[in-house]
Amino acid sequence: MKKWHFVFLVLVLSHYFGFANSVFASESDYKKFEVSTAFCFVIDTTGLGKTEGGVFDGYYFLTPNLGVGAALGVYNSFYYQSFFKTDSIVSSSPQTILSRFNDPTNYVTRTEILGCFKYRLGNSHFDPYLTAGGGALLASLSGTNNISYQTTPWDPNINQDYPPSTSNFSQTLPTYPVVQLGVGFETMLFPAFNVFIDGKWSLIFSNGISSGYVPLRLGLNLDL
Image (cartoon, rainbow, N blue to C red; front, side):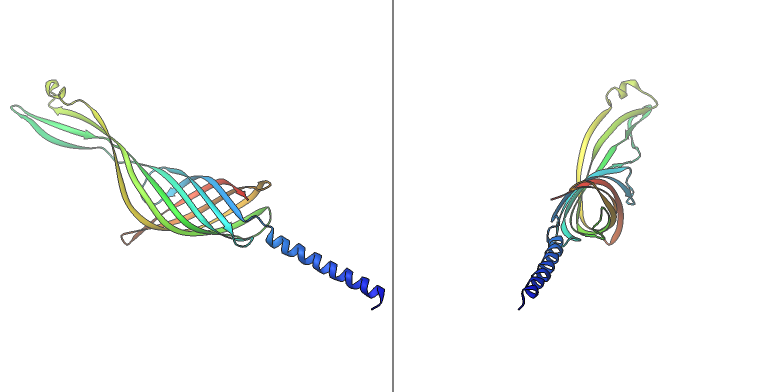
């Protein structure tokens, strides 16, 4: 082999392997872990009132685009329940009715625990992505009973025996399966830090009846 043939072969091979290394490096040097936290405002179709909360999730990326992970979301809802009353006769001569009023303040706390996937539709500085997941939705009801009394006709002697009172209560609600599908966008804020916004349609299956809620999330994620 002539000397210039050898030099040419070395140049070709070095160029090829250098190019290949750069390609494989781009495929292997991506950040494999992502952790994020977000504030959520929830659009609710389950009949609850204003709902807000927060979410923490993390992913391990099998490829630059596809990640598998888990998510924990906690949402608090104000549940309005109109006051109600019960009547009882406390005196028959003359007849006096004692009305018991309860104006409760109720809150529903929902905790979702999910296994999930995330698929990035690009690898630029402004990327759309898709998410999907499923898991369990745990819920509890808590609040305060605000009790007051009134006699008809008014009798101060009886009323003083029934002062207003308050009492706290809590109740664990059933756990239901839930599935989620979402779409969002993320963009680089600083190296390794991204800001994102997304929405996830969450479908609850309870006793054969499905209902849902949509967490709208604004948050930050960190690539590790």
